[in-house]
Image (tube, rainbow, N blue to C red):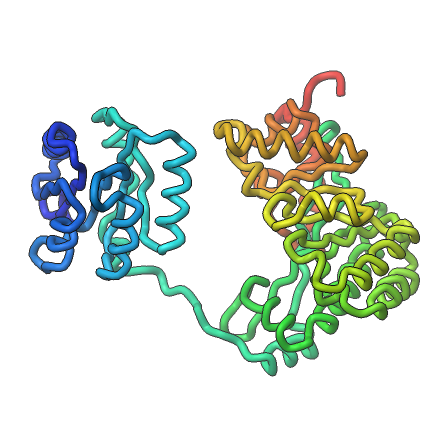
Length: 410
């Protein structure tokens, strides 16, 4: 990494006092190649010239003429390759919205600083920065896969199930798992479902894929039950699975053949997908499965467009609060309001609640204090292969005893 004195930093702010103050603070931390601009047009001229192109821009959001939000769009057009820090007196929600926009434009962002900026906060944000990591990005695999490759993978059983535990927040008991499929590719290694599920949906392979995932999950559940691990097994169901009435019979037949009870199976329906133009078929399938005592779970609650309508129309008995509203909800008032509302609504509808994305002890504490039923996330466990599960259960029980995860008396 280059030293601080070789790094170009641009401060863009319409307040001359802020420009002077930030320049001085940066100089105190060894950053001496600092340019300042009080308007976006001059800043873009500097960005276009190789000698003055900054590695980092400190950007004020609220400026006359060209505001910071508009400036970010121009950064994309001018192919800016450096990093960004937002500096603003706007409120937290406005800054978070701006941050999301920056990420959507795929400009790397270190974070944001509230005005008035203090030397400590500036130092903290600059300490997270590795200016030249961006020049040597880790090789990411953006390879696209064909329907034919995926069909072969399904036939060759290259799709492997992983299982992420769901545990009771009150008792620490392991209640169930969510089945997560991965593609064990011969040359590209482990491929995650966001790279191939859409290919299955677009090429009419989703039923074959879901059948394989379901069959493997049911075999695993049967094996666990026989060894005394009575776990509820959840499987993700695509909207395309619910387009044909045959799907209901397929699920019932596979569960019957495995000798399992419908009560031990959860079908997780991603809420942004639930209803297409014709709601009758998915509604019939889900209602009939519920009548047969399968559990129905509304997944990623709050991220789609008609969550409330789906809760009204479909007999879900489990609500999964999306990880985007769980992790750090203890520190963020907006997330906390959405988390609390989701939890409260589920309780009023007599539904079990699962919080996804529980990453740390503070997330866990929030669930405990608010009475959420189940927790799922890396704080509990990353997704595991079926064979790894018995050892994990033993180590989790030990953690429950030793880390005082539970209130005394529960």
